[in-house]
Length: 210
Ligand SMILES: *[C@@H]1O[C@H](CO)[C@@H](O)[C@H](O)[C@H]1NC(C)=O
Ligand SMILES: *[C@@H]1O[C@H](CO)[C@@H](O)[C@H](O)[C@H]1NC(C)=O
Ligand SMILES: *[C@@H]1O[C@H](CO)[C@@H](O)[C@H](O)[C@H]1NC(C)=O
Ligand SMILES: *[C@@H]1O[C@H](CO)[C@@H](O)[C@H](O)[C@H]1NC(C)=O
Ligand SMILES: *[C@@H]1O[C@H](CO)[C@@H](O)[C@H](O)[C@H]1NC(C)=O
Image (cartoon, rainbow, N blue to C red; front, side, top):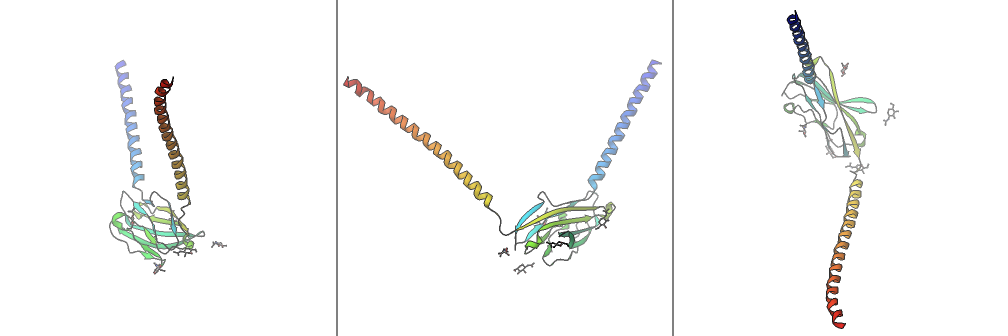
């Protein structure tokens, strides 16, 4: 009787172990499923500051573990609340370059499907170009879920270097103060050494006098 109880106990343990395993497998599967979802990314920096009149790269890349098929993407500019489409295209399959429709005279597509890169260049930037740029992508392979990443552009008259001069001033002042302290210490040491020598010489003289 006792042995049987023990066995059934062990059996139950094994069963709960199986449950744990099943749970693990399900968690892993869900994790993999999430990892397979398409991702669009504007990189580590989500904003850039450029001078008016220059050209700027608006970066965007995509990644998908299950692969892409007829991936639709576009770039939009949030102009005073309304979205303006700058360009759009469909990438038929991985590695196949898209035929990009451009809706803006100063936008140039510079991406490459080989690098999953859908970046654009904006030429001759004006102050009106300041704002949010949205890189949007949709992969029909994953039930047409929408993905997007936002990149913010700031347009400035000239790149500020006030912070730099302040840093230079602080460093110079600090350097000067440290230099002065070192100089004072060196002078003090030299003077003390000279005084010591003078006193050493003086002692015999005074001895002679007495
Ligand atoms: C940038 O804007 C300033 C002020 O409007 C203007 O003086 C300057 O010529 C512009 N620079 C370029 C490169 O367009
Ligand atoms: C933004 O749009 C609103 C309403 O459409 C308008 O009154 C406002 O002048 C616009 N602002 C700019 C900077 O264009
Ligand atoms: C940018 O400006 C320069 C000089 O004004 C002009 O020659 C060039 O065609 C412009 N580029 C674009 C893409 O508009
Ligand atoms: C995307 O392509 C552009 C133009 O070739 C390049 O400057 C940029 O570094 C690329 N971005 C990535 C993340 O590879
Ligand atoms: C995806 O975006 C499109 C507009 O481009 C919109 O019509 C659609 O409802 C969105 N779908 C989801 C699931 O958000």
